[in-house]
Image (cartoon, rainbow, N blue to C red):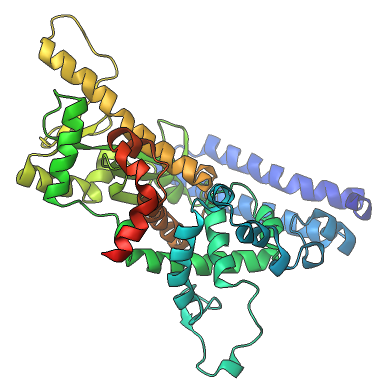
Amino acid sequence: GGCSTLSASSLAEIIEMPRRCCNRRFRLRRFLHDEDMLVTGTMVLELRHDAITAAARGGLRRLLSAEDKRRRDRRIPRRALQDPSKSVFEKLFTSGDDSSLITLTGLDHRCFAYLRDKFAIIYDRFSPYSEDGRLRLLPVDPHNRGRPRTFTATGCLGLLLAYTRTRGSKYVLQLIFGAAYSVISLFLRFSIRILLKVLKGEPGARVCMPSVEEINVFQQMISNLFPELDGVWCTMDGLKISIQQAKNYYIQLAFYNGWLHDHFVGNVFVFAPSGVCVAACVNNPGSWHDSTIADYGGIYEKLGKVYNETGGRCAVDAAFTKKRCPFLVKSNQKVKTRNRNQVLLIRDTQATSLRQTAEWGMRGFQGSFPRLKDTIMFRRNGRERQLFLVLIPMLYNFRTRYVGLNQIRSTFFPNLEKEGNYALDWYNMV
């Protein structure tokens, strides 16, 4: 529709510029034989190619009419949305239906109200408008606080939880909450910081190693199902989350995983039989091995301390090293039956079966928070990505303890699933 405003010569020139730059880059690779000069020259022309491509796109957009620009905008304007007080979320929330709220936010009404009361205290005191994204106190004078906010504390918390439970563009959230795209982005950044601050003070959401008494209970529960796995109390696995390719050559190498042939952020999680995540290391370069992440993030050190105190060990797969790590029990994907001690054969089989709990945990993360399946937008300042990835395990633990619906917990502690409705009441009474 908008191409009619371009002359044939202008359009041909815009399309041809990146192609000419690419041809120069290939000719440079042909004539430069020195490795250092080749890398340097290639990087220079890649930067020029990116700049020319961006200029071409910007030039094409500048030549479009105002109507053509509006037709290509994938954001929904405010005039096409419901009022936030009459939005789909408000209808769902006021209906009182727990299953609907769990589907959208992952929490039932009781747990949502519990978090909302703590969330509102910070929400009412701080402003979402800050240059660096940090929480900024509102003016003390109530008459000097500007216009009323689009979201209440309930809507802002629901927005963040719904964001973790959905995938794709934010325009879906616009339809659910009745807010403009810029408002959605602003309050998402604001709510992540508030909820992270709330969950850090919530014992049921913390990612921390259990007590010696709890570890002894976990060992007994696993021993009842897998008698040959003496002392095992947890499982560990890695999770790769897709991320956009960086333009910088060296940053791109850090996130590129040669085994999976794509760019990722590496994470490692440790799961207890209660279903909660007891240790985690997130936001690492995708080129790192899972064992390297566990060592760098201090997970090996924590597991070694537990092993020295209780003799507790962790079941892992072949991605983790057993050298200098007596606290690890490795499972085998292919159990050899010939010339094997029967006890070792049974132990390897049971270790492989127990390792399935780590897969359940990864499915719990990706199933409860489908946003992790999306490709993360790459930013040179990875602060937003780090905050979001730190928040996810804490929110997962809170949901596991107080809402339930966790495969690991229902396998090892089926009684907790039956009594899960009273967990939050019991915590409040204590």
